[in-house]
Every structure is written in C-alpha cells, then in structure tokens.
Amino acid sequence: MRTVLIANRGEIALRVARTCRRLGIRTVAVYSTADRDSAVVRFADEAVHIGPAPAKGSYLNIPAIIEAARRTGADAIHPGYGFLSENPDFAEVCEDEGIVFVGPPAEVMHRLGDKAVARSMMVEAGLPLLPGSTSAVEHEGAARELAASIGYPVIIKAVAGGGGRGMRIVREPEELAAAYRETRANAQAVFGDGRVYVERYLESARHVEIQVLADRHGTAVHLGARDCSVQRRHQKLVEESPAPALDPKIVADMGDAAVRAALAAGYVGAGTFEFLVDPEGRFSFMEVNCRLQVEHPVTEMVTGLDLVAEQLRVAAGEPLGYGQDDVVTRGWAIECRINAEDPARGFTPTPGELAEFVPPGGPFVRVDTHAHSGYRVPAAYDSLLAKVVVWAPDREAAIGRMRTALGETVVRGPGMASTAGFLGEVLDHPRFRAATHDTRLVGEMLGGDAA
Image (tube, rainbow, N blue to C red; front, side, top):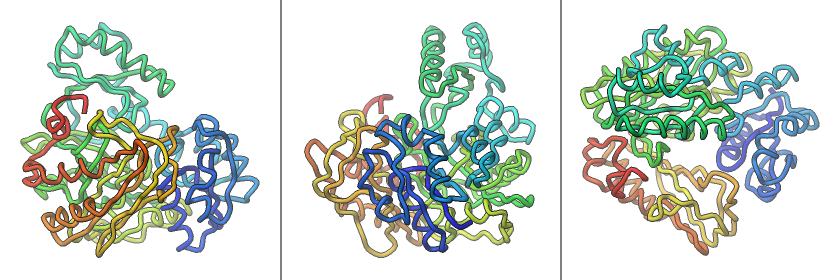
C-alpha cells in the first residue's frame, strides 16, 4: 500500500493522514469548495478538489472520488466514518477499479447494513435480540399487530438507518400509524430506502458497544467495551472505556458474541457491534457499524493499539498476528465530543467563524481536531469541532482530568456555542458519577425527550 486517498473531511481525515504518514504511506486528501483551506488539505501530500460544498456533489460523489484516486495513483481508499464509509456500492466500485477499500467486503456491508437482515443473521449466530421483527415490516397493519404482540413501548427503525437517524419511539397504540408513516417517509428521503422494522423499546437501558478487529485469515478479536449512553437524539456525546459498573462476565459474553457473529458474517477490518443492556444486566444485539467509529480513540487509549494502522494492515492482507489472550486493557479513557451546537436550544448547530479556538492540553490528554482560530465552521456538514480524550488509571481520575480539559477548552465566535460547558455538567451529574445513568440522562437534564 503506497498511496491512500482519504475520502472524508474534518478531524477523521486528518487523523487517518497522521497514521499514514507515520507508516510511510503517501496521502491524498479530497476536499469540497467549503474545505479548500482545511487542515487535512495542508497536511496531506496531495489534495484534489472534488466538488461544491453540498456533500452530494463532493464527499458523496463516487465518480469524482474515483477519478481523484486515478489521477493521483492511489491504490487504496480510506473512507473514515460517515459519508461513503458504509456504502457497499462504493466498495464494489473500488474493487472493480483495482483500488483497495479500507473496510469490510461489499457483500458483508450489504448484509449487515440492512438492519433487518443483520438481525436475522445475529439470531442464526446465537446473539440475543429484543423482541421484534427479523425482516422489514411491509405495511401499517403488520406493524400494529407486531407492536401489540411484543408490547409497548416499541421503536420503529429504518432498515438502512444509522448514526442515530431514522427511528421513532411509540409509547401508545394510537401513536403508531403516524409514527410508521413518518419513519418510512423520512427513511426514504434520507437513506433512499423506506423500509422499516419494529422492536421492543427499553425505557431504561445502557448503550454498550464492542470493538472488533478481524483479518482475512479467519482471526477475529474484540478490544473490550465502550459505554456511550450519554446521548442526545440517539447521537453520542460522551464515551468511555471500559464500560462502568458492568459485570466483567457480561462484558466477556458480549465480546465473545461479537467475535462469533463477526466470523459468521465473514467480517474483515474494524467494526463495532452495538448492544443495549437492561438494568438486570441482560444484553441484546442492536446493530453493527461496518466502519471506524467516532469514539475509537477511547479504545486506542486503553489498549495502546492504533486502530487506523490495524485497518490498513488488514486491508493490505496481513494477519492480525495476535489473539484474544494478547489483548490487554489498562486504565480508563473518556471522550467528549465538542460540537458547534447550542445545548440550550436543543443542540441547534451554530456554524460560522471560529474567532478563538483553544484546545486543552496536559498529560494524558488527546485532542483530535481540524479546527483552529479563524476556521469557518461550515453549515453543510456535521458540527463536530474536536474530540477531547483523556486517560487515567481509574474512572474517578479520568473524570477529574476531563473536567479540567473541558474547563480549558475555549470556543468563541459570533453566534457560536459549543457543547463543552454542558458536557462538564454531565460529568458532574450524580448519576453519571455513580455510573447509574442510562440513555435518558441528557433528556432528564434538559427536561424532555427532545434532547
């Protein structure tokens, strides 16, 4: 692997480029008109303009990205997360062009990207699921019958959904018809696929995920658990590893289940198996993310592994070279997402010029960011400015270190707001401190489900 084109933007593009440089791999950045002066454009060995600010014409423009790879001699493409990272058609085009796609095979993404098919596959692999459909629910009547049989509340999810989008909670039978129609319409508009499925909704649950690595030679390992229960609108704000207050036996069982399912699916590369854990400690499979996660740094901090380097090695056909017994985790890591959003206004994005941006520093503090003073936060993309990650020997020390880091973080600009202050309040919350929180915490803090 000599040249890697990074088909993404922002902090993840810069993060991938840094690992490539360390490994002696040449990098090509692609950029939209809005990102002409971005950090990765300056950092990469070469940069290619691929289209206008709207992602449809640039970061989702497969022909433009493939042409950029051809022009620059890239023999591999790393898709980062979001955009085309879980698009099996893109992976197939890369294969047809003789370009290595740094991710799982297209056919695996086809199967696991279809949430209903993935649920059916997990049943065959012996993973526990919440009661619900194992195929798409084709009409409102079927959804109503299924909801009545499994009991309310239920959640209606887009088969092609992801990133916390394409789902609707239904607590009463009279709400179901409208929720079913709206979820289907939204799924068609956002994902180009209006199919949905229905499952039981857990009011009180923790969101725990297992990081998996698998090579092309039949070896797969898990790298422990991450807790990402602090969320707004089903999108994560705080992640930590290991998952607090969970019986190690439960974590081991989830890890074994994820590895078993990855091998059964023919998975290759880095992937995340997501689970819900109820108050009694019972876990249920939710979905698979066939890509690098935003929160992968917390796993890197406790394992000492560079997950992007592992992705590149596996994509190049190398074996992992280690087994489950060789994976050792040490200490505690927490990640906070600093978004250009206003928590007081329902996390409304606040794009514009970043007049002053000062990231935190100090021992065992990592900041993954593409932002800087004078940077203009585009309205066209996700509002993530930085990921602040800390490591400490234990959870209490990690929380203290993160509180200090958040206090040092400066985000200022006309009309600009950030999540830094609110995340400090989350870390101070008694339920978070006691590790008794669940996915409802942010909503409870802000006084409603809209959070």
